[in-house]
Amino acid sequence: MDLLRAVIIGAEGTPYHDGLFFFDVFFPSSYPNVPPHVHYHSGGLRINPNLYNCGKVCLSLLNTWSGSQKEKWIPGVSTMLQVLVSIQGLILNAKPYFNEPGYANLSGSISGEKKSLEYNERTFIYSLQTMVYNMRRPPKYFEDFVVGHFCKHGRDILVSCKAYLDGAQVGCLAKGGVQDVDEGDKSCSQQFKNNLAEFITILVNTFLEIGAKDCQEFLSLAQKETGQATAAPRPMNLYN
Image (cartoon, rainbow, N blue to C red; front, side, top):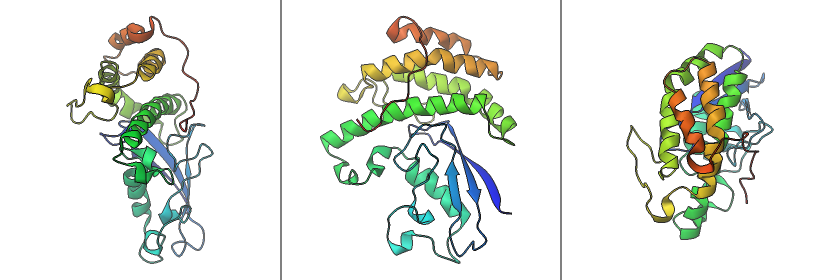
């Protein structure tokens, strides 16, 4: 087998929660002595410092990112499973802002955490756009999986959107619990709430198109911040 297509479900507690992230993998003839080549289905969006909008995946294990020798691909030891686990755990994590080179030392600082929250807000909008992209153009052989996933989780995603509009911090939801609701400057920004409200109509209608149930009531969220829904927000620069 030279080719593999894999999907990673965004973990709860991250700005990627409930999203689907697709990767194409090519195994060169010299594999497993060298790492596989991995391409991310970006849809033109850069949702993470390590996932480029051209599809490039930067990861030490793939020898496409700096790292110590033990973090890089080790023939006879490293596996494709490790690659997928690393993408989910190290890239699609709760605070992707700190994946950017030189930003890790800002973790825990007031300015760093503020930037991280802003990054998570923008990333969540990108994640929603990626959901719509996947529903409208599902990767080949995963058509049924995409429909099944979003029919099952569509309402939960919209419940999360409502919680964020009500002040919950992006990524704070876990097993139905909500933390940091309107807790000072940890609440979502007004700009994020406006962007989210503007995108709700597109998101809800796309869920309805694939047959997701109990979603239509959330159309009212489109008027919550902006008065009426407009077109999808244009891709934003995550590095402002």
